[in-house]
Image 1 (cartoon, rainbow, N blue to C red):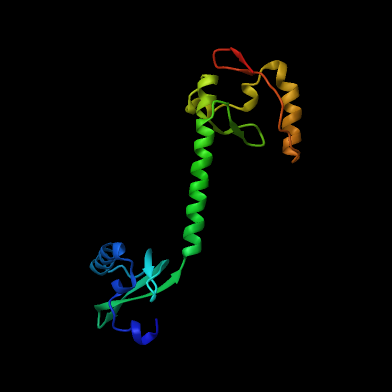
Image 2 (image 1 turned 90 degrees about the vertical axis):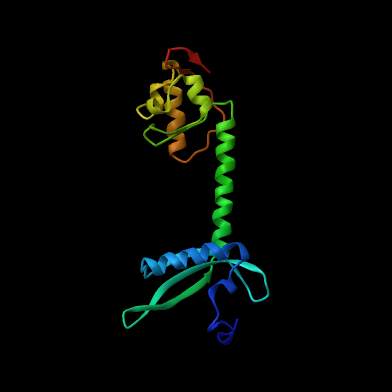
Amino acid sequence: YTPEEIIGERFPIFLAEDEILIAEEVFRKAIENEITDETHIFTMKHRNGSHFFGELRSSVIYKNGKIIGTQGIVRDVSERVEAEKTIRESEDLYRNLVEGSHDIIQSVTPNGDYVMVNRAWLEKMEYSQEEVKSLNVFDVIHPDSIEHCMEIFKKIMRGESEYNFEAAFLTKSGKTIL
């Protein structure tokens, strides 16, 4: 758009059709509540009709203490929005893989405290999510596996890879699982 094409136009002409009512509500609330500075992301419309994600930073314009309008700056944030969507989808996929696995999966801090365990871990190890918060990985490793696991843990903490190793664990009720 050129400045001449924009000046005097109502903002909704720059929005995708399904965003118009949402934007009008945002502007109405901003004016009613005299919100002087807000940022929102809308699906915007290029002059050629194609769409992009625009981050609108708007403010209310005053004259003699009265609101006479709004002004705003829109910047294209399409790449950021798409990247965030890709990250969310990747996180969802990861979460579904981990939670849907029948294998026990755990993540621990460098000192062995649990960060995350999956549903299979909870079921097989017989602990609740709340109980896991007070456990350390070495609390549930079978005594016969402690030394071996300590060595593996040290290697991993040094940045070395260890993909295949076996360890025995003790469930809450004392059963051994491999």
